[in-house]
Image (cartoon, rainbow, N blue to C red; front, side, top):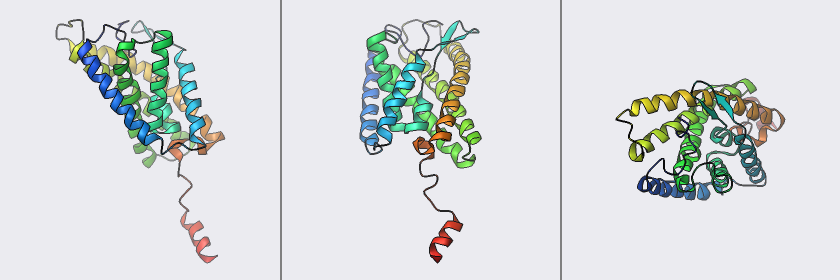
Length: 238
């Protein structure tokens, strides 16, 4: 279980599969750059730097998962999606993963495409899709925002974990004897607990930022842009 973590080390997945996902990650990051640059402005650009720095710092803090004999840390996809949006958020997480692999050896350099695909692409995409859905039905209050952030973080971690299971099915270097279901169950169980921890951190951070500067929360952008009927009526009379 120590080797079956989301920061995939060199040798866990074979070379051809790693190369394919490196290409997938490169294409995804190119799309994020093209789409994300339209979102960047004087407000979002510095926020993206702060989000990347925060994710990097918090990822250095690990909390133990006693039931699985491993430790977990914030992945950051949901947090980034909430604060700076899916395109820039995926880039923030990717930058963190690249620095960690190159400087700290956290995740193999040859496995960067796999790690970026799981945590930056799949995790952030799943989180933002759920955010967009929940914010349509939940009140945009601190409580509603906290529930949204928690659920998005939990789901993003589980989706990233299942991404690893798929990759291992395609190119795992150790024969599991056909017990892919056992691998999926082990990963899901451990990362469910990790997701709960990530959800609490993400919800606390997003709600805190929203209370102080709601204009800095990407997920809430445009919340006050459309006038209410009362305001519209007053404007028409004037």
